[in-house]
Image 1 (spheres, helix red, strand yellow):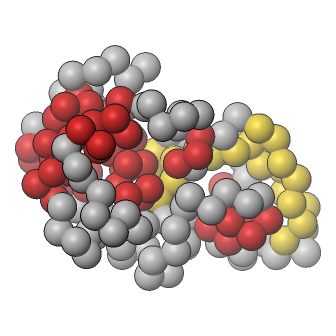
Image 2 (image 1 turned 180 degrees about the vertical axis):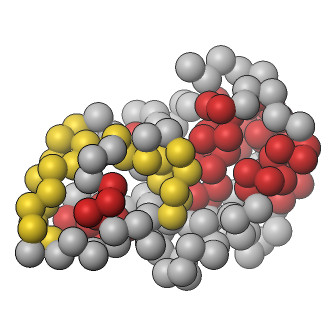
Image 3 (image 1 turned 135 degrees about the vertical axis):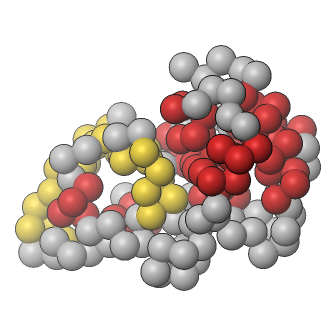
Length: 154
């Protein structure tokens, strides 16, 4: 076991875990941040997406030892009351169906828009290609990202 000092959603946390423990399980089991979901465990579905220093990352395969030196943002950290422009666009376009993948989808979308405030369809496809939606709401996801891209996300 090792002690790691993490900065998650702007708050400092200290956890005692094995260095190979996936960040996903530290967030969920040690910090109680359960918005980040387990999907596949092999970084193929995107349900576990968080931001590490602003970049979208799959927390299911990222060891806590690698993430400890960086700012980590989870779905709980992008807004206090669900009023981030991407979250509002998600509701406007009725994106969620079962909802399981939505935290990961939103985290990938917010990382994209932080880097590219006016993405093309191709940019959106590229950025979101690692996020799987079993309900198939991809058209609405793209529309929501386009709507959110017209907002000030800084």
